[in-house]
Image 1 (spheres, rainbow, N blue to C red):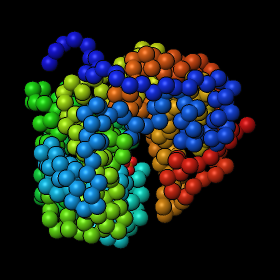
Image 2 (cartoon, helix red, strand yellow):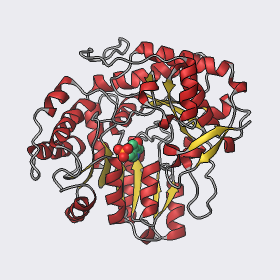
Image 3 (cartoon, rainbow, N blue to C red):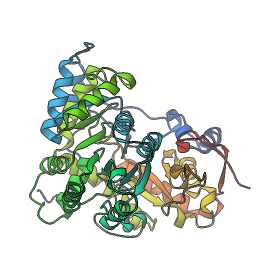
Image 4 (cartoon, rainbow, N blue to C red):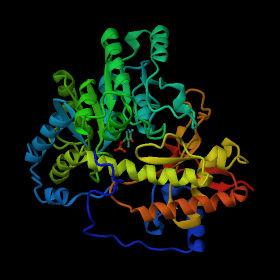
Length: 459
Ligand SMILES: *Cc1c(COP(=O)(O)O)cnc(C)c1O
């Protein structure tokens, strides 16, 4: 690969103008939003780093694909193009489209889980765990300990700890474990990859125990890029080859196409087993739509087929991850505590360190995200005790070691100058960190409370 510094392998053909607000307007906006950045109006946001989900910029080829939409109710040619692209790039033989990732999680969980089961995974994801619980299972975290340590520089913090898996088998027996959920580039750990060696070992382990491996492949291309950069033996492989190999070591996958695959909406459940596929077709028609569109328009399936191909290009991934490393490195240089190594889709600020005076029960990460918004109009989000939610049996708050604010970078949307402004705002907030107050709930939703919960300042 060329040794020059990364630069975007595209140029800008259309722009969306942004509104610049005043600090007074932002103070009012965050109060009205109950100190929850999810409840801000996007018109009041300058640089939107809330999520990388569905807000990427499609290419001219993807927009052209939109015009090729075949909106027939059944058997759209776009479905077949999407399905064949998924087989070619991701290895899975059968595909059931869904409106987004959680639609696939719902169908998967209903088919594979029985009441009283246990589903191990390399760290939880919010919607994934909820669907497992709704289907009657208990989630068990089997990620390596380093993943819970913001300062560990382990190159593959997404790895599975096989001692934890063995212990679970000993405790509950293989009959109670329908599948293992393995995520590539683990979101909640800070966008941290697992190694190919770990995935190969997982395949052997699950073959031995006859337990299925289900892949949360939302960020598989970012994971593949890290394997190419960090793992011995893969330096000469392409991202495309590594993506295929990762997928082919698993039995089935859920995908939120709004992330890696760069469409604004869509997802799928994919698998190799025909009986499983038949069951999924039976459920998708109830919850999503017919099995050849499942909640997606024909045009969106076509744009997805193109997005998959673009997402595995080496130069795309180099610029994608390069931009996040640029942001992370600048924050580190300015003395801001972040999760290391720098992740694949986001930089995570360590709110425990920045707001040491606020106890975790007063939601320091939520308070920090609000303060950053007020400072400059940069929108981020909490990934800490609020996102973790409550234990479904005891009703107690889960108390994750990681109490983070996520600055998530949409794909192909912002420039290096936007990253510079983001760093400036975080540094400015740190300078008056001791004046930031903790928060308490004024409205706590029962599930996924981080989306719609409201707060006020603790005086
Ligand atoms: C976003 C995401 C999901 C859920 O996908 P949606 O498209 O938002 O429903 C599942 N797993 C991971 C790792 C995600 O990041």
